[in-house]
Image 1 (cartoon, rainbow, N blue to C red):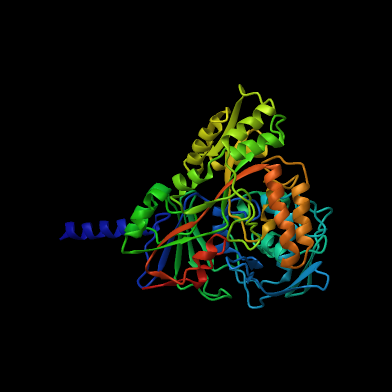
Image 2 (tube, rainbow, N blue to C red):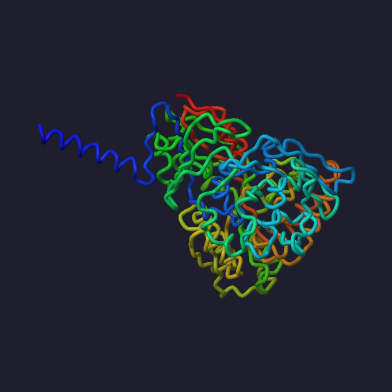
Length: 526
């Protein structure tokens, strides 16, 4: 009897240890949990200091934005219930939701919005996302304030904010840029030094207004959040959200077993796509989107002339890339404006001419014995893409050495101009000015090292036009000019390939590509 009691006590002790183990997820009776898969981990918990959309998915659950983009092109409300441009379209006034609280119970007001923009624009604070402020009066091209708190984001009252632009422009362009600016609690960060803000401590247990509240994480592996019962747009239909980093090679198995319920970013691997279609427990989606891949060229290298860059772009067989890498689930492109965009110039044709490309290089007297450094992200589709592109470039006589590095290192090397070529993807948007940040001198993501302002001048001209009819011919010209200058070789757009458990419904999959997931609208069967 004593032995039996001891065994029961041991079992109880082991169960208690399991419950207390970090990262262990045991759902209470009747509790609904949804597990989502990311292909890469978030890089930090500081919303203003990232270029990573994987990080932004995490932030979007904990914090809020003023507005969100959608696949229809319509801007959707978030913290801002409504907004209106002034008569000459030099400012936008936002009416904020009034029933919003921070997760620690403090009320949200316009002062938080103003404070957040001041944080983003403060050059002493680490903020890789600062360039999203580029159109606002009082900051430079990189989004940094011209003097202390000079950014023109002002509170008209407790629930009204006005943002003034540098010049008259199409308002939706500003809104599309601002939908990655997350609003930070003033009462947590006010009075802190830049050194304190830049350190991870203040961000370790985040306080937000979003649909979920932070619970715990195992760095680089998983994060657990709980539903915010007071979320102003409505309590989520499930109790816990688990964000898991899942290697793409293991993604389908995890979906089939129910270990994860949906991949919200990163496509189902093409080699698994046919099998995914056959699974009775899964629903699948293939949605054309705005995301694109591009081969970056380092325009500062003296031998990378305009003719050289055109020749490189012309030598790439994009049809092969789409079929080999995407199984046809995408389209070849030669500009950053996707075919689904109303601004797409259908007179632009995808070029491919190996003989002409080689002839152009010979005419430029390119030193064919020179080895060119080609950096790519390790263990991704881009690594396979790089190998196929290298084969194409070898056909025109170029010697290319591919070096696969982790994504953070890739960004660092290209920012420092160490590359001849680099390859990355972008989420894109329906707005044609999305590519400005990758083309603007001084931008932290101008990996082509472009100093010529011709393309950004055209974008700015298009943004100053206040109707679609006036903007369209300007952006048609922009697409023609970007082929001519060729700071990068745009490759293809990718369909968004998503698989989800059939227990989930009301999923806005079309909007995922716009960084718009709206988890509080999802429905989850018991």
